[in-house]
Image 1: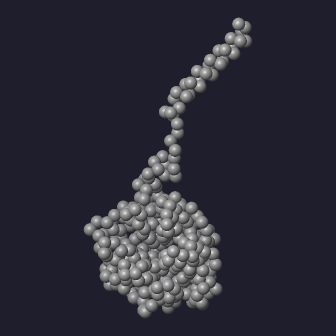
Image 2: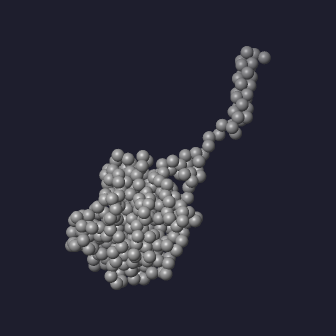
Image 3: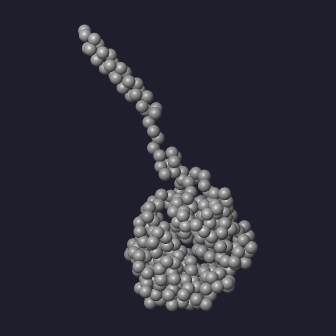
Length: 342
């Protein structure tokens, strides 16, 4: 045997031994798959939308959730989708074209409701050109993500003498009737901010009867305003949730009241606010509520502490579970630590 042959034989043996060693330990050193929530796919961490997405509201259609929020990124009504309420993807502008009576740039707090398999209504706040105030419009689509179209000759609600009308929220009562909540934008002109309700026609396009005043700012934590109302029915009781205080302050927070009917009377909860800022998030509020697999969740926006009023990242979307104790909502949040997925 020549020296060259011996060297080749020894090199081959070394390569074979190394290969056997790697094969023998590969099962113990294989990397663990990861998700956006880290190594444990059973949990998630807030915020679930890390970009500017104020005033979030979501509806479920089939296995998909559709989230709408105040204008940002050049879109009038941004819409996102998710199958789990945690991982969201942008899918476009739900209201790409505003009606002729409206001006762009201030399209706020959109909320959608499904009335039939192929009929969806979107209620939204927009700048009314004639009044010079914010007004509420309504738009229709055949699919949840839109595009929605508003063919009305003017706004659905304006209340210009009360500062304007904003933050419309549709609600279907247990008897099947449709209702709309909103706020008169009184803080824009230095008057009271009332939460109002009024019956909607079955097609959701027009209002019936007269509006009813439900609540206004009365408590120290509320500052000069309450806003962002929505109804939620739980265990036979009708709850009216709302945000209060200035949206761009750390003191912005969320509370609720118990109502006898969609027209009131309503009594504010003594334990308000049930959601307020902490070291993880500042000024949480303007929420919406969803139920998934028997668990209740609150979607809301909040600022990074110390960045109130900024646009980058702005008001991010947070998700925290609501538990019910003696019929009362209990919310531990804002929660930045990992928590079980919905």
